[in-house]
Length: 251
Ligand code: PEP
Image (tube, rainbow, N blue to C red):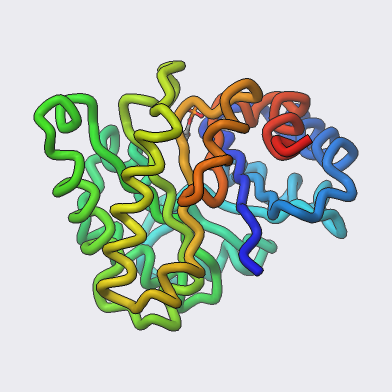
C-alpha cells in the first residue's frame, strides 16, 4: 500500500547543535507514526549528525541535491554514492532554488535523477511553474516538460522508486499556498503523463507530493485531495512542533 511521504527540506539553515536537536525532538514527537513515511533533509554537513539522531527511528534521511557523476575530479560536489554511504535514502533533485537560483536545467536534473537511482537511492524530483508562467497560462506545458525531461531514459521499474514533488514556485516560502483544488488539478496532470509513459499501474503507485507553504493549518485540506500523496515542507519543517502537526494531519 502506498503511504504518503512527508519530507522536511531544511535548506541552508541551522548550525550543527540545532540540527541535532531538531532531529532529536522530531524522533520523540513522531515516534509511533506509521500511516505516513517521514524524511528529513538537512544540509550536507549535518547529514551525519542527523543520521545518528534518527538511527532506529521511523524517520528517513534525505539530502537536498547531489552531483550526477561518481568519484572523480569534481571539486566541491557530493556524489549519490557518498550520500548512500552515510545512510541517505532520499535525494531532492531539481528543487526550484536549484533550477532558478543555481540555474540547473532539465538535462542536468535528469542526469542527477538517473545517478541517484543507479546508486540505489530514491529521488524526489521537484517540478513546478513560476508565477509568471502561471499568469501566462503555461503551467501545463512547463510541468509536462519538467516531468517528461526529468524522467527521460528511465524504465517503469526505475520510475516506481521516484517521488514527484509538485512545487509551484510562487508558493515556496511566500506564505501563498495553491488551493487544494489547484494543486490536485496539476497532480492529476502529472499522474496522466506518468500513465501515458509508464502505464497506469506504475502511475498509481508513484507518490506525488505537494510543496509550497505547507503549514499545520492548511495540510489537512491538501492531503484530502485524491491525487496528493504527501508534502515537501520547507519553513514549517524547521520547527519540530509544526512538523509534527503536519505529519499528524489526520489527527
Ligand atoms: C520547499 O523548500 O520545498 C518548500 C516547499 O518550502 P516552503 O514550505 O517554505 O514553502
